[in-house]
Length: 132
View 1 (cartoon, rainbow, N blue to C red):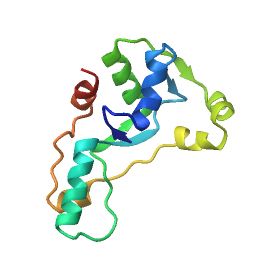
View 2 (view 1 turned 45 degrees about the vertical axis):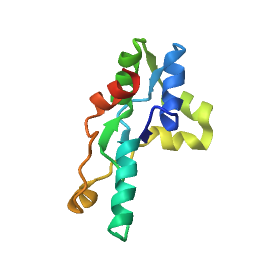
View 3 (view 1 turned 180 degrees about the horizontal axis):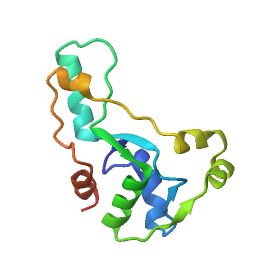
C-alpha cells in the first residue's frame, strides 16, 4: 500500500474512519506491506539510474490491518467501531474480500542490498506526517 497525502489506497481506509464508520476487518492480523510515496519514487530512481533488473518489493515494511487502522484513527482523533466479521466483509466486497482478509508479507532486503535507504521507514511517524 502506497501511503500518500494525495489519495490512493490509503483514502479507502481513511474515509470511513473520518465519517465515524471505521473498523478493523476480521481479526485485523492481515499483513499489509506499505511504503511512503517519496520512498517509492526513490526506488524508481535507483532502479532506473543503476539499470537494475528483476523484481524488487517496494515496501518499507509490513504492518497489520489492525495496526494501520488504529494509527489512522488515533491520528484523526476518531473512534473505531467493533471489528467487521469475515462473513460481512465477504458480503460487502464479494471476490475482492480475499484481498482484504488475507495478507501478504514481503521483504525489502533485495532493494536494501542495492544500497537503497528508506527515508520514511517508521509507520507511526509516516502516518503522523500524512495526518499531522
